[in-house]
Image (cartoon, rainbow, N blue to C red; front, side, top):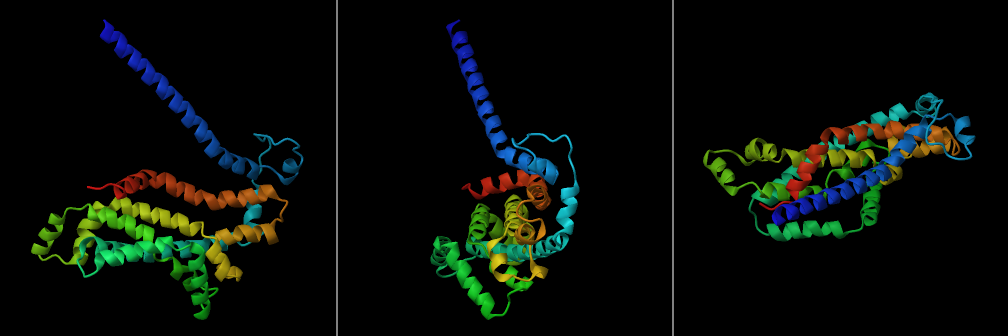
Length: 287
């Protein structure tokens, strides 16, 4: 009888704890999602309606899509999207080739000084990004690559963090598979493509999605090396819209442009969220 009471009390405590956790998670979700709701809500308000609100309203009864029309007519936002798509796809594709090959070399191949080289490679993460930006800017300028896609892409095709993440994932694959493949006469490249990449698919997808998000949100570097509107990305476009499009006061139109720019990343994350979580967890495990 006493055992049943203890068990019932334990269940009640667990139920109460779960209730508190769910309440806290719900509150946190509201805090995180509210800025997105406010962004969408503001983008649906007319300029006059927005300015007439002495107290911000949490709902609008006269939504309008005119702000979204203005987002594509005040500035060449469609062209910015095309530029960003070219930049993102090219940078991500080249980065994947560099990252996969480097991670394979550090995780599977044996060469003199490998551990020292990898340690020095990781130490690059300690260098402030501002110093790298300055060095890259001088290099691209000296090579006369400003206002070119090549100048935008080249400094972003390598990432120490992504190489480290994929290398740790590759290292979890048993060595016996590699030795068996070599006995069968399989080349290193074929082993990488047919064995390692399929096994580590979640991590590869994670790296790809994170790089796409990084490229899409890139602002500082494109702002430095491009002053020609023909090479502006959507991140540059936001500033261009603010300065030469709607003006600094037309907040609803600005919010509409931000919504348009944000939607592709939100959709991408929702599609691959499970793969991202699986890839990050696999990359951090030791097996």
